[in-house]
Length: 130
Image (cartoon, rainbow, N blue to C red; front, side):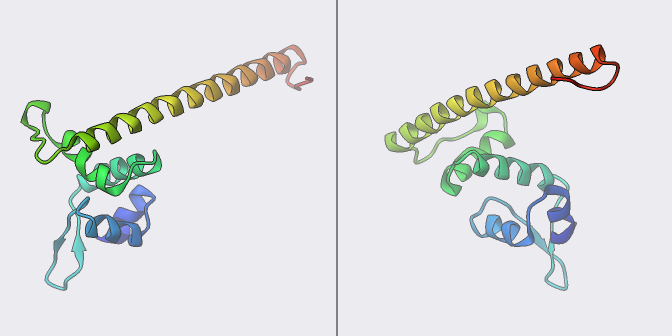
């Protein structure tokens, strides 16, 4: 698929896709007219990249983690991983754990609010009266 279709299917902009490619996070083949062509698997790859970047990871860290999504755990080779990089990854994991906790509490609060709203609506015969 071409860059426009990949952008449309993933919510990324063509500029973001070219940036991911320049960082080595995404690859494309070139057609005879020099247009980029992406495999169907690129959709999932871009979703993974965007999710990790939105979670606050650096492009360098995303590049380190992407092989974990591509192959079984026993075939991943951790070449050049320094203690500092491992510590940074642990900090990121801990930060993500905190964010997951916050998001879970927020989701639960919205769910409780909606349940109460629906209950009031049912009691009022279709009109919510808080």
